[in-house]
Length: 362
Image (cartoon, rainbow, N blue to C red; front, top):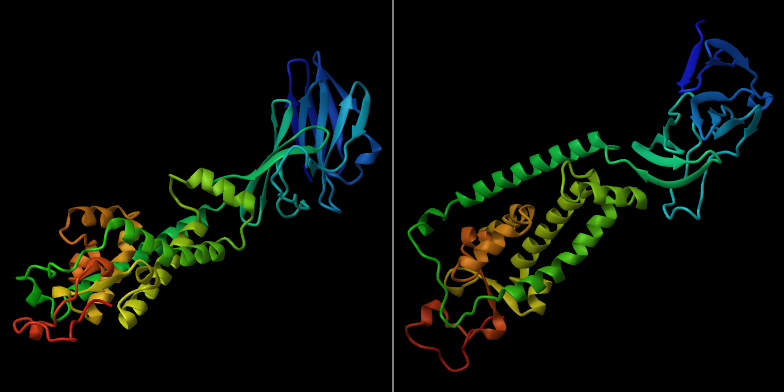
C-alpha cells in the first residue's frame, strides 16, 4: 500500500511526514535528508496537518479512540504534546461545543493563520470556523455563512411556489361572479364615515401580528444554536439566499396571521387589534363586506407583506379612503368607529331616521 504524506517547506528547510502504516518524519536542509525521531507518545494518532510556526514544528493529531485533536510541538530537539483542543471560556462568549471528531466521518481541516491555526469542521450540516493556538486553546468559534446552502435553496423554492399559489388564488377571487358589475362603479363611503388613520392601522397591526410573529420565530429557530443565528443574521440580513429558518418563519407568520384575520373578520367584522383601536372593516357604501370581500382583502396581505409593506403604505398614502391594495381590490375600507357618525340603513335613507333606530358602527 503506498504511503501518504504531509509536507511543509520553509526558507530554511523542507519537512515531509510519511505515515500509513507507520509515521516517519524527514527534514531536508542544505540538500541533505535527515530523519527526525518522533515521540513515542504519538501512538495510533492520525496526523492531520504539518506546520512550522514560531520556530516550532507542529503536527496536528487526531486520536482515533476519543476523536480528540491535539498538537505535537518540536522546539530544538525536544517534543511536547498539548492537551486536547478545547474552548477557552475567557476568550469567547460563543458556546459552541467542539465535537468528538472521527477519522472515518468528518475530521477537521487545518491551515496556518498567522501565529495560529485555522480550524474548520462540519457539524450538523453546518461548517464551523475557529482559530486555535499551539497550546490547543480555541479563541472564537462561529458558523460559516455557506454551511447550509442546499437547505436555504430548498426553502427559497418553497417560498416561490407558495407566493405563486397565493397569486393564483387572488386571480380566482378577482374574477369570481359579482366582480364584473363593480367595474363601472367608483368605491365611495358616506361622508360621516372617517377612514382609519395610518397610526391607528399600524398599532392595530402590531397588536394582531406580534403574537404570530413571535410564535413563528420560536418554531422556526427551535433547533438552531445562538451562534448559528448570529452568523445567519450578520451574513444574510441584506443578501440572498436567506437562511431556511427565516424563510419558514416568514411563511408560517404570513399564513397564520392571514387565516386569523379572515376568520375574525368573517365572524365579527374586526380583529382584536382593530377592536382595541376602534376600527372596523366596511364594504361599499359603509355596509358589511361580503365573505368574498373579506377573503380577497386578507389574501392580498401575503404579497403585501412579502413586499416589506412598501406597496400597502404607498396605496394608503395616495388613495382617498386610505385603502390598501387589498382593500382596493375587494372594495373594502377600514373606518375609525370613534370618529364616525351613525349611518342610516340604505333602504331608509330617503325617509330619514326614526327615533331610536340610528344604526351606527359597532
